[in-house]
Image: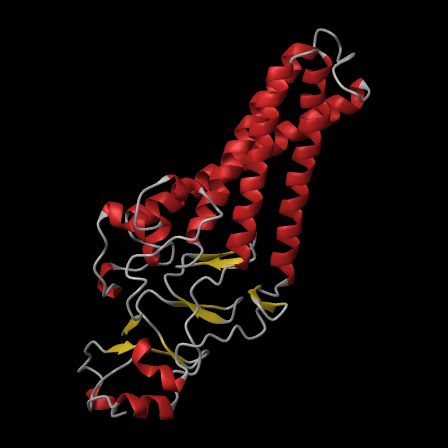
Length: 306
């Protein structure tokens, strides 16, 4: 391409749906695949963080059910045990499903090798047209796409790479990440309240008869549960609020570091940003990690705007 023509930048739109015969719309996960079917980033640090997250949830399950819920049943507080047991275990289940879906949902990767010389010739672009190209993926980069050095792919609307879910947070899995932070914050707060309540009930009895375990073990389990709850409540609350602000302002974490001159897209209106992440219609399914959001414009051909 003639370097002198580079200032003549203009917008190019490439409809993937019109290029079916060239396999532009087929995604190749590369090494980031599990059982030849699911997206899974093979990063050792991320895998360790995921396992550590599950172990912390397992510990919270054990401490709450064995020390607090079992104690409530022993003192005939059946309604307290049922309500809090169902609520806490339900929150843990929703947090786990949200985490798995955030980790194993393809975040919105851009097809590789769409910017080779052969493919560029197929586009029949006018002389002087400039396209944005990723030198690592050899692909045409859409607006708001960024290359992740860990996933080794360009990701549409990339917010950040999160080691706790071992995945990039992008266009396709941001809903599940937001739900994961929300459910972790909620169950952490619930665990804090139940732990404080348990201490108030049992401190005068020196924890005798308050658990199937001996008093020192019960106290140690509750102290660690309280510390874990406080730590993760603060951390996930901050992440949840940050994500909601980014969605509301239609601005990812990476884009917040860019100047206004670097942005070439029009921001969505406030509520439209929520609909783009959680689904077109506002409903209870926005809070469900089991449902896949129907994104705005999902039935239209995806356009690369460069």
